[in-house]
Length: 401
Image 1 (spheres, rainbow, N blue to C red):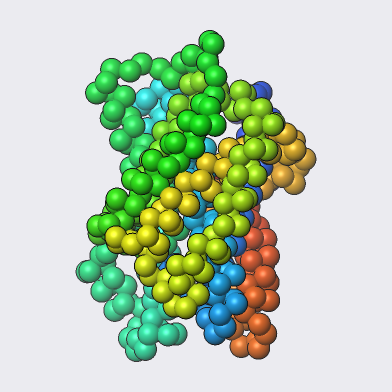
Image 2 (cartoon, rainbow, N blue to C red; image 1 turned 60 degrees about the vertical axis):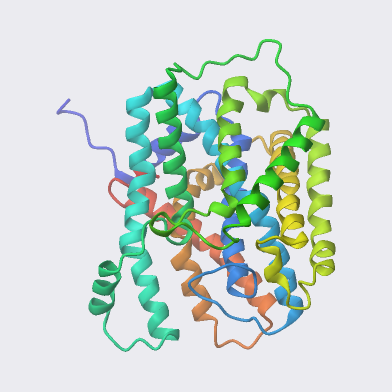
């Protein structure tokens, strides 16, 4: 209608936010869990900067054994469950979205929401961060034009940095849709009549089997190695695939509604006890003495113990945190609603934020753990703040995030 006044941009943003957070039946505890997991990802990468395990764009502060041990324990614990939980939630809501939109609209939505951030990060953010690192720490003397031209001439592949998760989720989604099409399965209808959750015994057996599968995979491909162009984290893929499938299955059976608080407490306790066993396993296996590599793969008892430890942490924390957030954190005010809206964008953009913060405070002579704490807190805050600006100020960003 030509006579209607235009809605101001900030009011459009608020209306979009209301539409996002006020939909009937929205699982607010899952939104809050996603906020916590996104913050944990940012904290995890800050830990890598100052002594934790894994690769990152900016590394500093590996001087003392206690820092390396503490942050390494944090990273190992996070790695054991938080990305599997992300895949489980993604599977759950992928099934719900496909059920609501239909296959064609759902696929288009996935390509926009996953493909666009992946392309931007791989072809803009990642080469800039790589160039910065080579200039500051690698002795590169050339200009950005020559470096970036070389980057694309010798293109290493997609899914770089934290966007490996987005790429892997896109691949899992495509494989799931292809399987549905080939199998002739129609709809993700609920079928929960007379259904009960798997027993504790079944979940424990499943966890043990997943550990043995991971150990078998790591006989041939050690932790830390991906598959070439796709950068797939194959040593961790058994759990990722399993939990993505569990999320899809959970939608069909409405598992979250069947999970009791008592059952959640049992699994959360198991997860915490398993986490506390990690230092015992590492010390017994010689990690403190510099023998940590034997845990990453190969025919060693250390590699088997690590592969078996992860699924028990994963099952305990994924089930336990789902129940805990449903029971204790199933509401949102305006602030949490905004964080929920911005969590995905914060995940996508947190890498340059952490690099900027880490390098900025590099000259400050304080203990690495204090730097880790500061960069973690600021990294979470700035990543979410920057995400809000992107989502509501960059044209078209609200369709992606």
